[in-house]
Length: 141
Image 1 (spheres, rainbow, N blue to C red):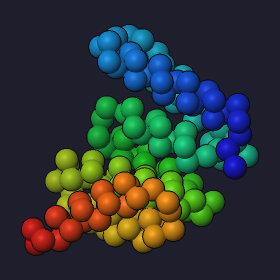
Image 2 (tube, rainbow, N blue to C red; image 1 turned 90 degrees about the horizontal axis):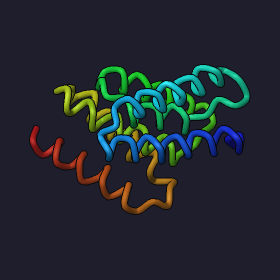
Image 3 (spheres, helix red, strand yellow; image 1 turned 90 degrees about the vertical axis):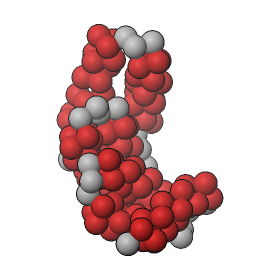
């Protein structure tokens, strides 16, 4: 279970990051991003460490390779706590970035893993997105 204080801080920062991005306020965005990154680093390998903070950081990371590294960290932490919801969403997000970078095989592997994890979740929309993207890639050959 995620520490409530950390969850609230990450959630609030995510909302503020979205608002800054929507306003194209780069200075504010960078400041908020630095705060989120500091939370992740401060909590890393402690009892407060949780996939949500790393997934959120990756969601707002503009450099694709760096975002994938964040998702990889989130995925490892999701597996460690056996959180099927996070395992599915993180692997899906990572796969979409891998496709942008032309890493089709890695994306397919993550989507296959996401599909397996998604068998145990209730989010039907995410399940459908994973399935549809995986099918479209497999059909392409």
